[in-house]
Image 1: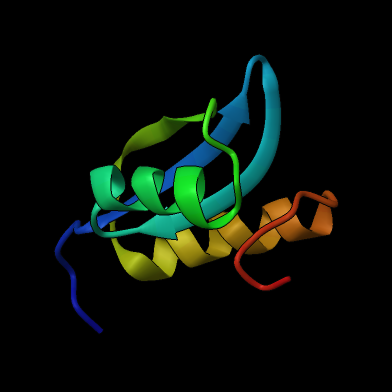
Image 2: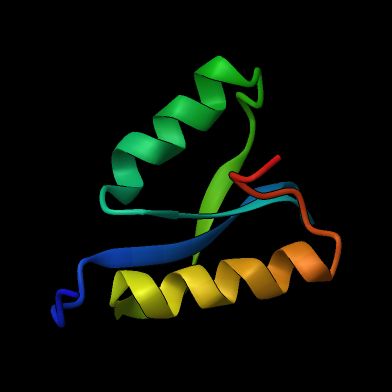
Length: 74
């Protein structure tokens, strides 16, 4: 398992509402994807914490899933 910090945790927000929680290694590309593919053109990404290892970020994402947040595992 890599020990370098290459993964961003993020919320995608439309206004003040969080509509998605996810992980990525390229936060700018991911924002564009959300805005175009999902039709969330007025939304933006809010980074959660600092970059981290993938395994740590995945545990965070699992916690968000348990809380009922839409994630990449939809």
